[in-house]
Image (tube, rainbow, N blue to C red; front, side, top):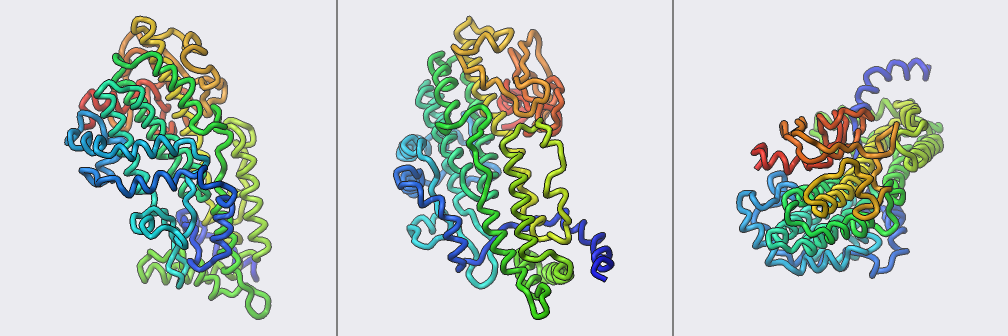
Length: 490
């Protein structure tokens, strides 16, 4: 009877699970979960946390001339933008923010705890917190500090360009790299949502540094470019290398999913899962849905409860999924194991519906980690090649090996997506080359650096996308800077 019921459920429900992404959440009063999430932080001294230095400075930061959002952020700031004079003055008027960035850049972690208990009320009011629910129902985790970090990023970009306009290139890179190091700290936060935010913001910040190099190419001092390529970008975190091997996989979600499983899979009289309890706990994850949708969601979960695996079996499945991810996390995308089906893909989406729906997005961490590796290595190469260009009468090398050692370390000439060769693709250009980008068609001159991207195919740099899923990932010349020069974006 159970098998027949399961087969009737599969067709309509599998489609639902393919689109359902449940954000990990936890009851606000769940002290055990909070303690587990904060346990790693207890091993880190206050002097090794950046938040105690950075966030007090943020509280004193004056409001930017525009609200940080889609229209005004680190990627939209540059000296020819509308209202640049106001943005530049805002950066100039807040030197304490830059000092805090520089002071905190070598901290081990961000050091922001989960939950607001015991947190400075001023931090909570300013959104410098990670909060959970209201204590009555399962509430979604809110990473309130993302917007303050974005605001600090807007400041860092504005200050970097302000100093660039003044010819203060060494201090400009100091501010920009300090912010990149802050984002590298965010990448070590425990939750997947935080890691994705940190990785995406860091990838974008590094692309902005290449925009900066292109903007001031004729004026950049060679010693500064050598320093940033050889000694600064190479050590966003002291233990980093060209493959970011020390970057940890997010573990906090596993703690929260295990806690939700424990509450959801309560056993009723007769030894079966309590369908009402299961539907209430899991359905609460969709608390933002409208009343009608919420009703259908809870009804769906009541049906799933009839065939869902036990608490013990679900925990075992959760562990096996994470163990599989961990093995893959240490390997290159081109490794043979990466081509094999994942434990998650082999998991029955009905029997282990809660596990499948709550950890599906973990694959995005793999994608963005490789994108950041590519952005970092491409930025190091670009900085080194700029130094070579300026040192050799404004000529680009025919081969990047000519710039190794003196201008950048050879090991950073590494493409994590490449199957046939570990090196980035490089071409010295004798004529302009068209590059089709999401911003429109741009034209490259001088030389090009690109990675093959997530599709593992070399398209010769003719097409660019942010992650290389369509075409390649062009790193130099920076496509955003080219699009600005050609009037495609303001």
